[in-house]
Length: 337
Image (tube, rainbow, N blue to C red; front, side):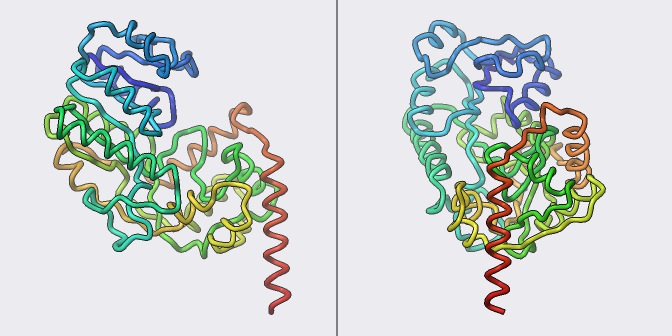
């Protein structure tokens, strides 16, 4: 198949790029050159900004694609641009939305694709919902061949999955653990969460590419495994060979005192216990199975980060914020006890 990916080198999309290339498809990427050195040899990079609509239109010309995958569309204006660019030029348009778009607070922790979309806590999620609504309207009214894909917490070998971290990513939390410092876990650590390795996600995604049963449909792609946040942080600590020193702090407190968008990422996402039902995906892609267990994937990620100094980005601002919040919360409990 002739496939065009918009992005193609991110946490989710790099694994998809690798798998599609390995499957022998004629693969094109529109991006600005980040991580190009890591791409397979049989991938053609169209080096440009997707927001330069005139230039992109000139590059694709009259080419008809079997599928176009959008990985970096976050607001309606971006998918509206894609509709103008690819209407009549692709047999399938696959949009990466987000499982955070599902109803918050949840009326049922078991999530299917028919779970309502509504998230009053996170603008990111509301924008994804608006993008989905625009695209499905174009499918209904104009026959635009849309497939919606909703990832949940998907990770790769460059960053461990966490509930609370700073703008610099996961390294500072690992560093705090390694130095014997306490780390923040939101809530009481017992809420359930689902982690999916990007290579498992790629198998589900690639199974939907060119799939007649995927047109006009929405799918989430996740592992079937559920873990508590305490289990996740203990796996990380074990991989580092240290004892976990956890400080459990209510998500609402963290959101109220945060320099980061923890209202969205916690109240609107990670603090909710969720269990994903992947039955719909498995009917469309019968051989899909997530095989990388969370403890295995996280440990491999930790070891990879430790081997690569370029992934060890210090975040002093977040480190100081953690010390400040942990100190204030500990003192509050002592004062009231």
